Image 1 (cartoon, rainbow, N blue to C red):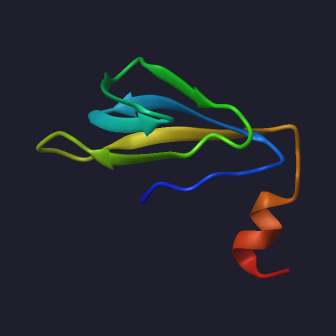
Image 2 (cartoon, rainbow, N blue to C red):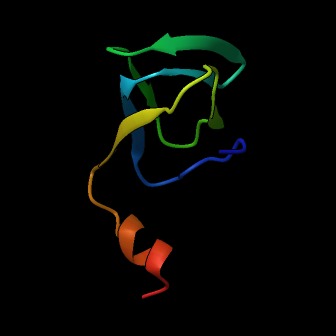
Length: 74
């Protein structure tokens, strides 16, 4: 996911399988399975698959700000 930001919620990720490379603000780092990463509102962030296999993550937005509806175009 290319770098972007959200003004109204924390965008957080729990890496379930694989390894991600995250950029959060001015920092870039690897996040293996078991890592938790959070980008506060207004913080530029992005990620990519940094491993050879599949990357699976749980993505959590808080507080609820209607993000799913925006993705669907509701």
